[in-house]
Image 1 (cartoon, rainbow, N blue to C red):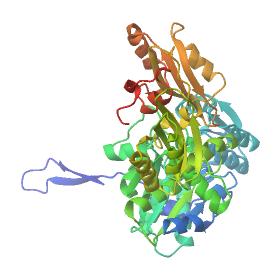
Image 2 (cartoon, one colour):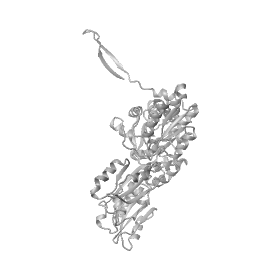
Image 3 (cartoon, rainbow, N blue to C red):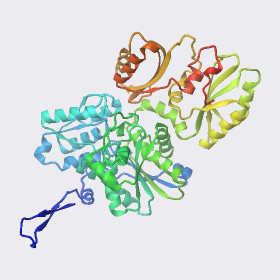
Image 4 (spheres, rainbow, N blue to C red):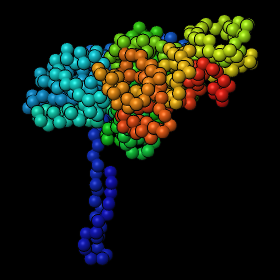
Length: 541
């Protein structure tokens, strides 16, 4: 509520000032959540213990199983509540939405139940499992653009042309209230003390609804939002005190790949959210595995964010014997993506460490190196002779935790073996582990770059066609991980005189990229000629 004084024009000495109130009216979310219409189509999802994860963390972890809804995510609640509030004549004209999948399924089911038509605009990068699920529920699907923003703009255009009501995925009070019924259920299902509730954030609708309810009734419970490190629009916005639009957004957790949070959701998060934690891709993959071990269910990356953050929070706070609730908010997982998740889960759980180890190329040194490994199981071992004096080994070792990896590295170095820990090196984890031994004496003026591009038919060739035919590709690695974006590493032979042209290519290519030309791992395994010299060894070794 804003107040201002205004002079009323009466003579001096009279009551000449009027107090005028500029009232900014906001919805009463407690009332809206208590009266929300969601249970015509949604179920009250279970609040289940995760006994294996709880024992490992030393805290009681409860999973709010929104992955068990008929559309395998929470999105049905908000979509249906919004559509159920529409006047009958407006609803009869049809609705339209933009979505990467989960909101689309919610709108489709709601439209079928309410007897109206739904048109859904989805990015072309949307996993096929979500496209098919939306179509199977009776909605018409239009594929447009590479990102949610592209689909959103097209949905707005089509909605105006066809006189359809747009159902926003998060920035709408009725949608927020529908998601808020999850908070109502949590407090009803578990009435003992709760230390914190962890909730994934994309546009902010889910956490806004839950927090608006929980903080009104149980303000002592911490509300902790979770975002991927490469899709942290809410975290940046809260830090800046205003909404921040991301230039680019990571797509692994496609359900939360939002460049800009909502106006209303930002306001509510400012008011009710205690903090936002950021998690890595490896953390997410490990959380997917954790939930599988406890439930035999497979969450999608966005659905596992809350579990990943709960683990980090326990470690950071050295927390013991507390109750933590994590909202498992979705399970629309592409089967092909499991290959990537399985590879990265061990790293995210700190159960695998990968190292680059340099040993003398002499008799007995390999045996001494193996003795240092001791009783640790090897997960990977790559070696190729490349130099008369030294050998460079890429090795993966099973570990119990991060401290275990540090001890292994210290042990290697104490025996005279230079060691580089690559466990957090994206280049090594994504590409180099499949390419060890690929040095070439012909790779003059080689630059090494990693790129990410939307995974769609023809995208790889489009990327290659954008490069100058004058540049020779000296190294290339691509592997389909079943994700929404492709990852490649490219070695390009660019003469020094053409560096300005190369930079121009980078500025216009339109994809995220990282310069890896000075990467120690690259220099060790790929970047030097067969005539190895001390100059090729990274300073860090």
